[in-house]
Length: 489
Ligand code: ADP
Ligand code: F6P
Image 1: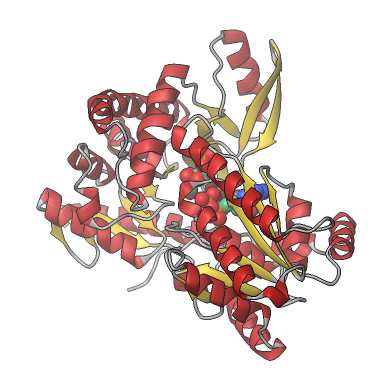
Image 2: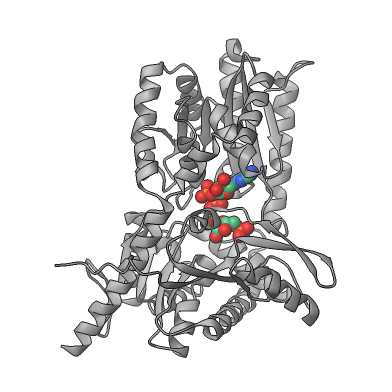
């Protein structure tokens, strides 16, 4: 039938996510500096421009005093952001603990923490309690700022308990929930001690979205197998109430990247990089320094390539830019040392007095430097062991119109389903296959590169973040109208 389209009017949208697009650094009692946050969720949502949007989330900092809280709220207000204040203990148990040590590894098929299993089991309940408490605090802030007719869009695994909290406060609120990570097979989800409560809470939303059809299907089968509910092609039904479930693959604001390449600052960076690496092919990795990104596997594959192809030594360099993330979680600290050790060993083995094969940076790059790197490099290596979507791969493609570089992409990233036609897909666990693909990419003839790039470029410019958000919000509006019609019948 005919689809309602709410895009014409500027609808008020409350975006609720654990992390705000800016993180705060304190400079004095009431003085704050705001820095851009790094991550796929922020990149995607910054591309969303057609709504009257307010963000609600955590500014990444503990602010125990009222003066500081007031000053920060004021500074954030200018960016249309509203802070949720979480104290140190809640952050420790909710963010470091339940979100990043339990849900994150589980949803990425790494499993529940193996070490000190008994301690984990014992602390599980208190971490889940903190998770629920944090979600209640988010709900309080949403409620305070909510106006009738607003669309409330909750994001990610940090806030799975939020749809239920919101609907309990106001059953008329339009609530959508979107997951930026994979949703794992129901066989994985059922390991979670809190599996029932989380599924039930998400189902309180009107519309639930995932990046891929597979994740949506896993969610529906978790609801059927674990909760015993009926799955329909539309979603999941519980006692006459339907929760719509669908795939909405995210994209980037491709124009922002394409336009940036014309800026003099970006051109200057490009010139410097080209000079610096003249005569060598350059491969690029850009990731948060996260266990799911397969950074050790990527570097080991590069080592194997160098080992087997002595003629390429000194002729190819890997730039791995890995921004530290979640540094209070022990797994992440271990990963940093592991990566440093492998990089050191390989540079010691294949480096010379004047050059090393791997440049590894533990930092983030600003937007202009990042665009320049994307534009001048020959190959991008994305080797995630699991990844909800992976927007780095989209950004690389957006910046490669003139060079037509090759994207090597993990088949376990959501992006493999959209960029698979142009990328070289690899299993990141298979170091031999990745090493072979590196050689294939470096030797690829121009016409094949062009064809592959063209395929992906077309996709990246036509499936944007703007389109993603507009589709989700429009679908949420339609879902609610349809539900109202059903109850009237
Ligand atoms: P995730 O959601 O796991 O963070 P994505 O690939 O979807 O992964 O998104 C990562 C975002 O963060 C991208 O927009 C990318 O540009 C940015 N990013 C990641 N690493 C860096 C880095 N080292 N420097 C600058 N930006 C980075
Ligand atoms: O999508 C993955 C994600 O968890 C986002 O929610 C988040 O913005 C990003 O990774 C960065 O992680 P964090 O917010 O923990 O720094």
